[in-house]
Image 1 (cartoon, rainbow, N blue to C red):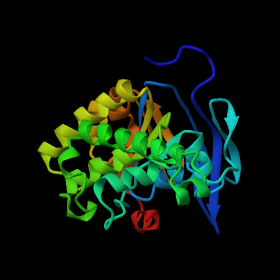
Image 2: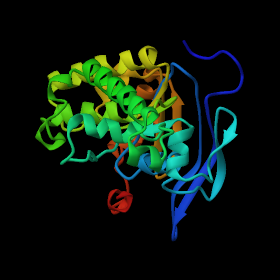
Image 3: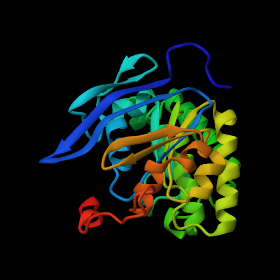
Length: 275
């Protein structure tokens, strides 16, 4: 259920960043509450993944602020932001390929561990209890994601769709409040996409989180998201419900490269400049 109080879970206010003379993201704002699934879409080079990098501390914004549960995080490092409650997946899968499936999750679990170096060296009772608890948690996650039977297999041996699901499971292993999914349906076949949509819907209530989703497959976005924000050239050009976004002339123009009113194509060279 979505929060009803005024303070949002994630409050992004007018953040922006420039690389040299290019303004990659400009005045980006977003409010996200528990139980909400918000889509972030736009043409290639629109600034979507840059927004994710700003939210997770890969980049520090030049302007604006980011607050998680009321606390500013825009000057925090990535591991601090992950610890505060924001986890992400990546457009290009970034598993540890030579570690086993369960070891990929255990790596994430150690973010919350209170183990000491001495406890690990001497295998103290507290250390062993902590390890058992983390393993139990990871096995439960793998069971939910239908990966338990492959827990001891190298992550690289999984099929593509299973690797995508493992990456989501790994993000959830740090107990986030906000989950950022960067093109989770990329490379999936139609049946895998149906399964993915069902999985994502179940995450909202099952894990009591909010989700921000980047996705190029519009059928996935329109089926899943309650609200959608559209970026073009780093700027927000529309925000609204799926039906509103589908009918918005600015969105149509951004994707089709032609004015809805005149039907004339963009000036030559514009598409190349987008990247």
